[in-house]
Amino acid sequence: MSRARIAAGGLALSAAAFVTILAGEGYTDTAVIPTKNDRPTVGFGSTFKEDGTAVRMGDRITPVRAVQRAARHVSKEEAIFRASIHDVPLYQAEYDVYMDWTYQYGTGAWKKSTMRRELQAGRHVQACNALLLYKKSGGFDCSIPGNKVCAGVWTRQLERRRACMEAQ
Image (cartoon, rainbow, N blue to C red):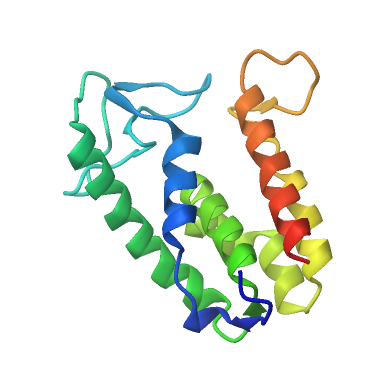
């Protein structure tokens, strides 16, 4: 890991982070509803097909196509993400964490996020801590101990915050 922060506009998602995204999402060859009240996903968390239509229950995908779809999704979202904080200096590990978050929640949510505001203000530690504000899925608080509805959402947020703080 580089110990120099680089303007976000000059960074790209690392291969290790792409694998982390895929592992975090998990693979399914048939569309599922990952958490209650969520939208159908297939492959590695894809909610849309290549043509822009929404994934529907019953849709199927091969592992190779799922990786290709995820890579296209990351590429598209990454351009929007970088433009939203172009001059903000980040460590590669920070960039990777926030792109992982963006893959899950989308660039629309990223642009409105507390993390983005904190980074723009130069408050990197506060941005890491703000990851824990995003603990709900389908109206459920996923941070509640013993939660069986969306515990994985909270586990991912804790891991993202840990990785982000380690980069500091």
